[in-house]
Amino acid sequence: MRAGYTLIELLIAIVIVGLLAALVTPRLSMARDKAFVATMKSDLRNLAQAQESFFYDNAVYAGSVGALVANGLQVDSAVVLDIGYATAAGWSVTAIHEVSGVPQCALFVGNAPPVGAATDEGLITCI
Image (cartoon, rainbow, N blue to C red; front, side, top):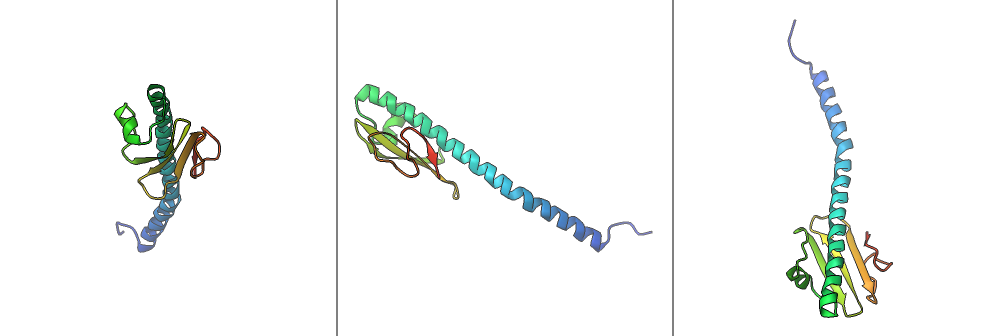
C-alpha cells in the first residue's frame, strides 16, 4: 500500500478551498465597507455636536475642521471631513474614507445648500 494522496484528490481539495474563498471574499469586503461607513457616520455626528458647541461660543458655525479639532473634536485619522459651507445660519460637510471603494457621506444643517447625497436637513446620507 502507498501512503499519500492521488493527484485527483489534491485537485478536488484545491477546488473546494478555492470555491470557499470565492464565497467568503465578497462578504468580507462588504463587512469592511460597512465598518468604514459606520466610522464616517460617527465622525459626522461628532462634528455636528462640535459645530453646535462652537456656535454656542461664537455665534457662527466653524468653517474648518481644524477650528473644531482645536475645540476638542476627535475624528478617525482615515476619515477626511470637508466643511464646504459655514455661516451663522447653517453648514454642510462631506466625509470620505481614505480607503478606495467606500462611499461618501454628507450632512447639512440650516440654510446650507444640500451637499453630496444629503437631501434632508440633519440626516446623514451616504452614497
